[in-house]
Length: 191
Ligand SMILES: [Mg+2]
Image (cartoon, rainbow, N blue to C red; front, side):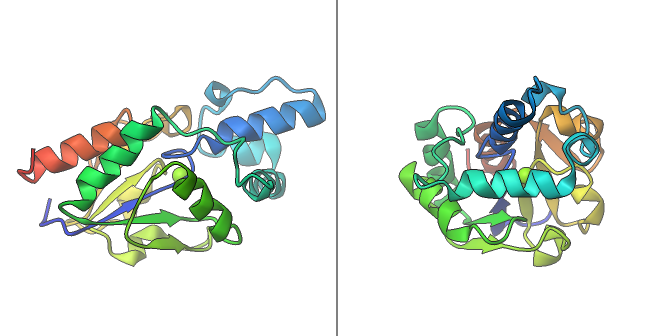
């Protein structure tokens, strides 16, 4: 691992349980019984729900009048906010999402929870975050590490849908953002 200065923190599947909301909306709409744990691999959403519908339902959830209030945070909100605060004492910490068109809603969701960061970036899902050149990524996307250079690293927040990457040799699998932050600070001598 090289020197770390810039850290990218993902939103969906990392800070925000948008997949759980997706399941709820889909279940209500189509009388299905999906839960997050059914999402057993990365392509499940495309196979079971369809990409367009997945994008539409999740966009709608973010755009609800109360700024995505139906989307839960993963874990204790105060601990999440504290983790990013601790990270920002040492690094530049940006929130980076591969969802466009709902920037204001996602930022409002973060602000509502006192989750602070340096800069917010959204990029089209067709582009890779690897190209943004962060030193470390806290992200649930399996395969992101394959696109990283040797001096970049991924802290993979473990989810049912990224199980295949838990043992990937270029990722550090963690249970939560808080664990990722603790390990990042420990690995760089800050803890
Ligand atoms: Mg994600």
